[in-house]
Image (cartoon, rainbow, N blue to C red; front, top):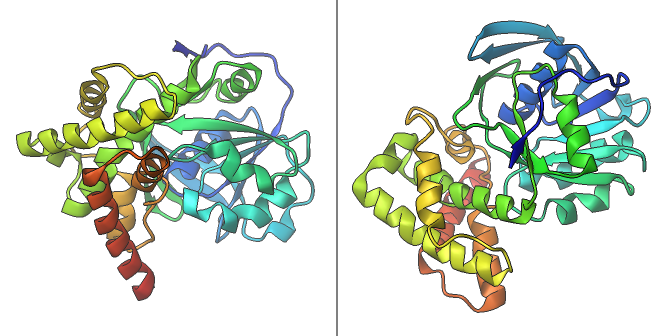
Length: 312
């Protein structure tokens, strides 16, 4: 995987819309707005005109145009960054329909797999680019987000024309964009990380330090063994030591970090269950593969999710 160059490029000024201003969308919108190279518009539930961005280098405030109603979109934009949770994709359809034309490019910064199939019905023939997000963002207030960087990349995309154009948008920002020649394997490797980090932090209500317990590590490896078997049945080439690699990647992150599902449970928001553990179990069922541990996690997470939805 090659890291995209951080050298400035001579490009026209573009209009970039960020749909969803949570932990990831807030970081993306804030970093792009701070760089000042393009016109950024954010699409969210409520309006404000400044965003506070806590970066490793310090805290900054950036002006940010935020729309709260799709009817406020005057015309299609050059790029859309879809930063909602996967289960919120249909709810974002009204935004996408107003923002997209066939010339628009849509980057899907969501967990799981099947990004193109999930989003294509809502974008009117626009090109769709799946993106894997590795940065750790945390929404502190509706208008304040924090960026923490753990691995050697923040977002990864396919190494093709669309991926390189996406990377160019982030020149001059703190975000590090990586280009991958095997995006299917990359997507499953990210899913492996999410398959243990998100459920276990959510079920234990502990941050990632819980993954360092020896008994939890053993459980994680067994969960990952099941998931790797499913990925291979899907035709994805993964290494024999893929579970160990996934755990090693997790251990590059600070134990103080949470996960998106962990923060959603604390806030009593619906959990992104089906796109993570649910996707593994569904693929296993297609291939007749037994995944008892992943199925047990899915059952427990669905029970929590249902309780959150009833309370809401």
